[in-house]
Length: 185
Image 1 (tube, rainbow, N blue to C red):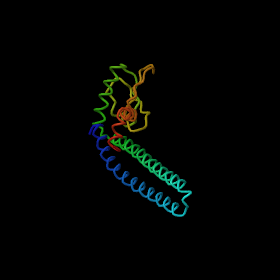
Image 2: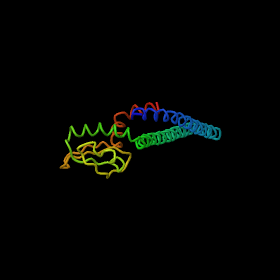
Image 3: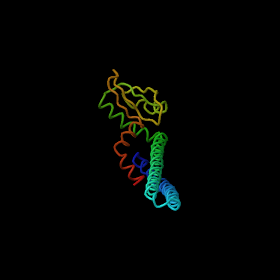
Image 4: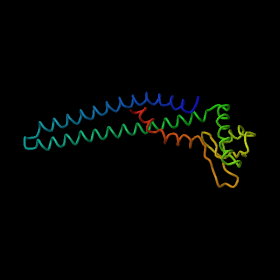
């Protein structure tokens, strides 16, 4: 399963979660608006005609506050869901089988060899075993995380960061509007 498919699957799960969040937020919004309207109506009945304008202002203020609070709750839920999606993608990448990792790494090694020639490659301890004999780069198992590689020219002057977290962040930055639209649109 490629990275795009993993993202598509997670987006589908996110869409289902989004619907549930929107229903809950709408129910909360309706309850808050109902409460605000009831408070306004009670205040109007108790006050004389001279303070009607003040009651209307307070009612409007309550409704706007309730709307703002509902929006804050919805935005917080959306932010949490996006964080969950990102963590899920990284978990999927962390769990890639060795043969898929090796295939990805071969492509990254070819790209780095063309750009840098040789040097060292920083990786996780698990990935160091996959890289032995694969390239001109000497594996150094010093990285933590979901996986991926960091290539460094021998003199340390040039570094290519292909860690899964970095690649996901780059993809995320390019496609975040599309992801947001699919999850919350």
